[in-house]
Length: 291
Image (cartoon, rainbow, N blue to C red; front, side):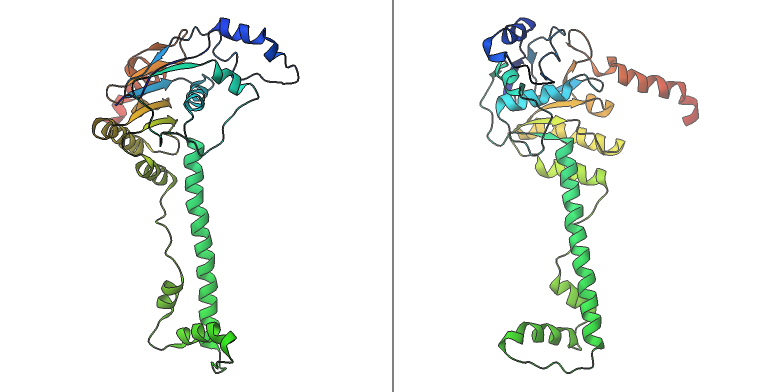
């Protein structure tokens, strides 16, 4: 499914015209980012398939490109991103066409957002672990106490009931803790948690911008994510625009790949890309070691 049909960045003349306008006479800023980032790159109008990939090395601007598109389309996001006082001005000079209306739930998912989700699970589990330790101490102190468990009044009822619960001969320490503590969320490795984040977050009939989703993913999990994205497009009406230099994600079936490193950026096959060729050459040189 294609929602976003095309996107255009401001031309060199557009940028020069902006800075000659009265509106842009601002001299107290150190950075005018993202102005100038693509100015001399002769950027073409970007035309999108149901899966479009921006490929480039660090510093190529592929993440900035995603952020600009996300802001222009007013997509939902959960993580902050690098911006300056000129960011909205730059976005205002961009243009786009739609093949169909952007679904309301569409969003940009960045590696920072994924990391924050993984950390949230860890923080929640850390809190549960701390409470478990307190419950164990409470249980041991109560069963070790020789003082009778006497109800001293209504204000004392909660303590008395809890103590009675602990001293119940038919209940073990583990049953007391299970009753008073929610179970830990299933804790996975960072890569497993990141992969599950995408599986849980992606919904049908939605446009998604994914910024370097391979971060924290092992090679095997990157391949799983590739198959998952292909299935979301084939069977669930999604459109993806992805920034990556992962050879596994670059190999997504039928993806249109823009090589942002080239001037001007152009569409290429994934097997032609510099970083993919570097992997190929390395393993080709060491092929005999696998035999």
